[in-house]
Length: 185
Image 1 (tube, rainbow, N blue to C red):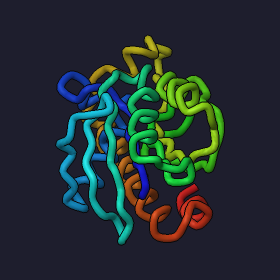
Image 2: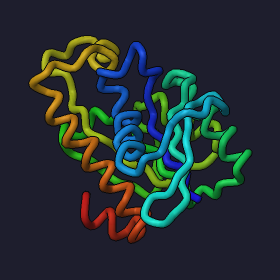
Image 3: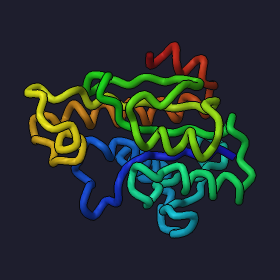
């Protein structure tokens, strides 16, 4: 069973923000595979279903970004999910919008959500998909950049990135991470 986690902030207030790229990918997977994200437990919203013949859990932590690891740790312990079956999707300012990067392992960089995940899981050895959001042009406040509303002209590029990330998740499940990395990186 795969645990596919999208990082973000609660959607009522943050749905149209760069920091919610992970949630957007989960929403696209849920729609395509008709998986209801309607269970509220483990400090998150989640649903179970099948993607490409594999049982999956789609999770959107509801702890706010900086505590995302708490939700992931709880659900991993409950379902006894191996780190090899974990995929975490999140936004990355060092990648251009409409691009993604897949990695087998690694650090958190400057991403506070990933810092929480690494701290709670006590490992860097899990798959991750980073969705590019780019950097602010005017060196504006970085917090406002990631949690502020997305201008309409930029939304199409970000949507392309989340679509690629959705396809990358499917490829990882179907063919493995090495093939997915060769195809998408």
